[in-house]
Length: 144
Image 1 (cartoon, rainbow, N blue to C red):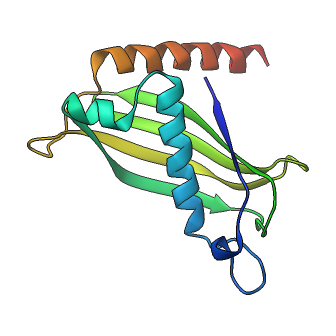
Image 2: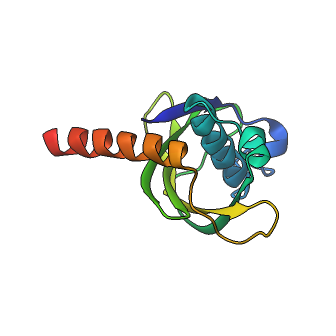
């Protein structure tokens, strides 16, 4: 499963030249991951009530082209790994009109227990959903 959300940078998202500030992409990528989970039937609040928190462990991004004020951008999110307490998201920010990739990378999340902040396994039902979609994604890639 791939999720896609729309972002249109406002003036506060940019520098004096109208170029999107690099750290703003991190916020947009988080929105993409949040909506990916929501599309899967989970909310961050629900998972927290079930005793699960997410912590970003690693961010690896390539800034390839600048986004600009008022561009129509798409944040694309998919999961490429789910194992133990780890979930690896592959994400891109793409210009909707040109399909040019502006930012691309992977974000590693660790699931933590709410009460101890120690790593815990991804909840079984969420893990099953992610693994099912990983198999579908792998099958689609092998056909291409």
